[in-house]
Length: 231
Image 1 (cartoon, rainbow, N blue to C red):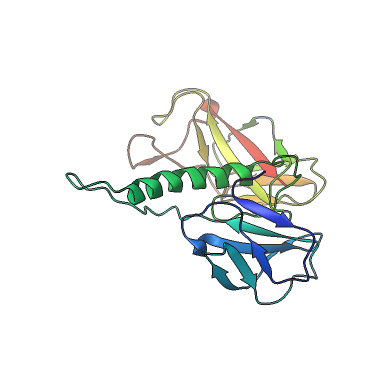
Image 2 (spheres, rainbow, N blue to C red; image 1 turned 60 degrees about the horizontal axis):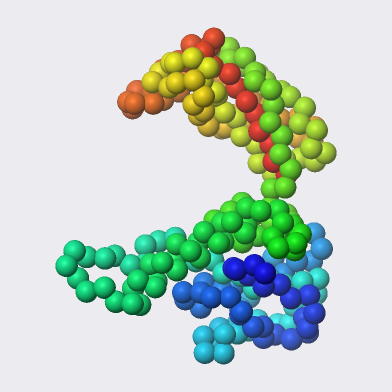
C-alpha cells in the first residue's frame, strides 16, 4: 500500500472519498482523475479533518479512476530556536514533514509502487507526464565537443517524442576547476522529435568555472557531450 495516496476505481458516482493516509494539513490533500490517457486535477469542494474525507464538487463518473493524494509543503514548517522549549507537536511536525516529502518523492519517482503499475502525477516533487511518470530512458554515446559552433543529432529509439531532453557536458580531463567525471547541464539549445534528439550552439560552448563565477571556453579534447531523453 502506498503511503501518500489512495486510488478509487469504483464508487465514482459518489462525491465524497476517504483519506486513509496521514498528512500534516488537510489542505495538502488533492484529487486527480485518470481518463485512460491523461490525469486531470479535480475540483475539491471541501475537506473534513475530523472525518478524514475529501469531497468533490461533482461525481468523477467520467474517469476510469481517481487518486486522492498528498502534496506536503517543502517550505520549513518549524523553526527551532536556541533555548526554546521543544513541544511534542513541533517535533512531530518537523519529523513528519521530512518523512512525508520523502514518501511522496519515492512514490512519484518509481514506475511501479506496490504492484500498482505506472503511477499518476504527484505534485511539485516529481515530473508529471501524460501518464504521470517518465518511464523510458535513452542516453547517447559520448559526442565530441567542437571548438566552434556545434550541431549534434542522434537517434533515440524511444518510439515517440520525448517529454524531457537534457544535454550534459562530461569532463574527461581537469579543466575550468572541474575534474574527470563531473557533468554540467547545458540543455538550453536541445531539440527533439519522434526519432531524434539534438543539440545546437551558435558559437563556441561557454561554461562557468566550478570554483569561481567566471566563464571559460572548455578545451574541446577534455570534454564530451551526452544527450539524454525520457518518455
